[in-house]
Amino acid sequence: MEPLAFKRGMTELMDQGLDVEVMATDRSTSIQKLMREDFHNVQHEFDIWHTAKGFRKKMHKKAKKKGNEILLAWTRSVLVSVSVVLKCRWKSILQHVRNEHEWTDDDGEHHRCDHAPLTAQERRLRMWLKEDSLAFQDLSSLVLDKRLLRDMEKMALFKHTGPLEVFHSPLLKYIPKRKAFPFQGMRERCHLAILEHNENIVKRKQATTKTGELRFNRVFCKRSKQWVLKKIFTPHSF
Image (cartoon, rainbow, N blue to C red):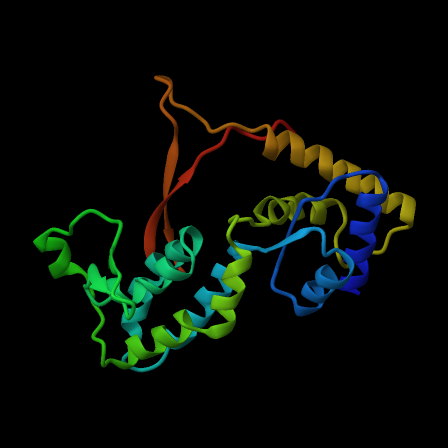
């Protein structure tokens, strides 16, 4: 069903004269095949957010093993690497987690981490992994996964479907999955969801204080067990 809907949607866009240069999707093998065979003139990119999300699930699964709890402390750093680097720099995370920030690869090329030199206190407080530990071996198996490294070739443009995921929230408000609607009703409800999304998401700005400073809220993330800053936006208009 998904490949059929995707094919119809792409065909309709092109029939209307839209020049589609890049299409970002998840790593579905059926969609990959469809892009190769029917839309080979369109550059196919993988959604880097979905890739990072899937990798996080695998890391959490590995971290549940006895002695692997230390992996949870590295989840955020590893996922940041997924979002901002590709193959060569992605592999460098295996050096960083061992407290090795300058190294020479098998080809004799010298590399170093991009971050500023760590202080003695930072080195002392960080939970570094030992190369012969089970946690490091399990992390290596995830980082060096052949399919993941191959798919990174389709992540060079750092595309993601985040805005579409956000749109699903108002869409489900007007078109709940547990109810059936006639075609015309479905169409008009989609229009209402689009109007609300554009007004309250696309046009909304970050809230500011009386002095004009941007507002943030500190939130504890249960999944990563770390504090993060989130933007505070102006209230919905309706």
